[in-house]
Amino acid sequence: MSHQKEKFLKKSKIAFDPKHRKTIEHNISKYDAAAVEGKNRYLDFELAKQRASFLKEKAINNLGGYLEEFETNITARGAEVLWARDAEEAIRHVKKILTGMEVNFLVKSKSMTTEEIEFNENIEKLGIESVETDLGEFIVKEAGEKPYHILTPAMHKSKQDIAELFNKKFNTPVDLSAEDLTLFVRKKLRQKFTSAQVGVTGANFIVADVGGIGLTENEGNGLMTIAFPKVHIVLAGIEKVIPSVKDIPLFLPLLAATGTGQQISVYNSLLLGPGNREEIDGPGRMVVILLDNGRSDLLNEKEQSLALKCIRCGACLNTCPIYKNIGGHTYDTTYSGPIGSVITPFYKGFKDFGHLSFASTLCGKCSEVCPVKIPLHYLLLLNRKKSVEGKKVRTVWDYGMKAYQYAFSKRKRLDAVNGAVKNLAIKICGYPLGKEKDMPGFSRQSFSKQWGKEVV
Image (cartoon, rainbow, N blue to C red; front, top):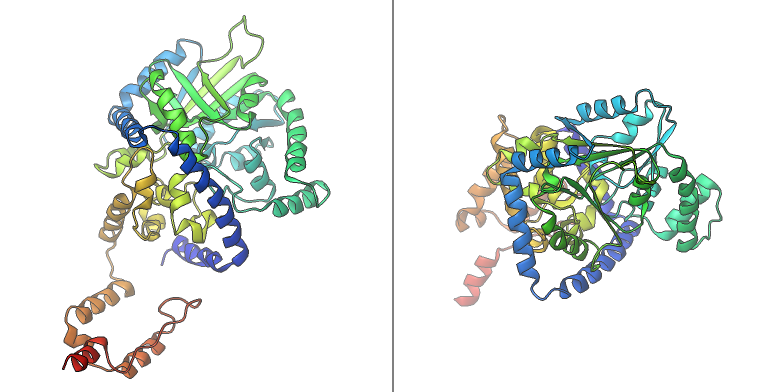
């Protein structure tokens, strides 16, 4: 068993923590209700999904062409575009940008791509503080944790958990309301925004035909990260591209409806380059780092490449019965839930993360809710196939499944021994369903034998 798989199994026991389950069920139920309202605003929601799926697939199928078009258009307005094959190269680019600048800290808005390359950890090794400005990201960083959810980093924490954390970290009253906690963070971050020299963001969309970076958010911290600092660094995965600015009116409401249930997010920005001489606000320098980091390997897969259509709405996590039980931290990856289980083995290797593809009931709910129609449950099956084909040595599981296949292929084999023998075999095996679950006992006679007697 790999080290990562062992960690996964150990962490998954959080499913039996009543407090954790209660918090997650409550928070996800809020999103479920909001998402229903968001979808009901559409006259034809299925048609919107089909259009979005078509456009993202079109972008992925001509990824190189659209990225070059984006680079040509945005550099014409003074921005710089750098390409990074992996996380290490992306961090080298950032370090080079910061070289010669007397920077003690920088401000960063919510970005899963920066989490992917461990931006905070690498930058803080240089003695530069990376200040998270998204409320959820701020909370989990202060707690010494990683984001729990693609969209809602602190979904696993209740209001009381956060109040106790702030009391410990900042000596605030332990009985602060949610509003007071938010105002405390807002005041603390405002000082950082106005004095920061460098701001770092991700990108929700890379818009090819105008050479723009699309950002959508609800707190305004992304806009603040851009407005005050004189250097703006964008870290974006290459799959975020969409063909045209004309596609934005489709994608922004769709992302909001499936992610938070809103008609549209509160703040939506299209960044077309650094500020010019006539503009008072905005960065004087804008650098876009386009990250591959395994995406090209995934692109070369005939069917799994469809996962690159993902717009990071988080809907598949909210609906997944596995995620709702074991939570985001169990996956031990940047991208959790069904989409993370599909893409992570390609980004980090099947040897260490192939087990994630088996963390699914294959109920198909993730595929049903996906706004860009990624067949996630089918891609998980393909990943399982790839993972199994990559193994050279048979495991205990393989031999067990062979035995299972032999026993269940014929009724007379199952009826060869009575219930007492079967119960003894289960007892010897230990805990077939796990230590937290009781294995029901077998009856003395099988159902088929009892049925035969009743019929006769």
